[in-house]
Image (cartoon, rainbow, N blue to C red; front, side, top):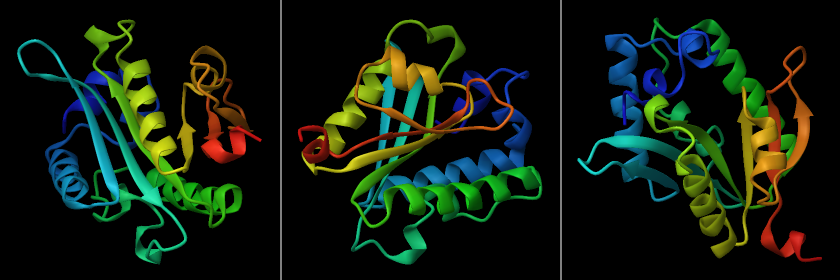
Length: 189
């Protein structure tokens, strides 16, 4: 799981530029996932191949009216960033926290923090399957879903047909932005 970002996002993609594949960042991922697996508010969805290798991952973190303020940034903010992380990442996390608060308020929702599929396994429906399962989890607790994506806005809002709506586009970025999937009770109105 800790090597998913370099395997899922090529060197020309934005994410590896702000979260480089270094020993410090690998340890950060290890600690972050250990925390997520122990946190009852977090879900780590994993797809594995026939030999047990992780080929897809989606992390969810539940945030609701009863959630502590310390959880407001999700599981990726529970571990301090390393000197190897780009300073852009800290700013992006702060912006995401604020935007999530503005769009979701106190309404129960899940924050999708990372979705990645190994480059060799793309186009096999793994991302769709992980996202469908995330939507089932959210629906079970009548919670919305909040996601900031750097490259897959249209995938969520147009291709998947799972109820995601575009809320904001990243300025100067044709494919990034914020998408939200309303709570089940709101979609049924």
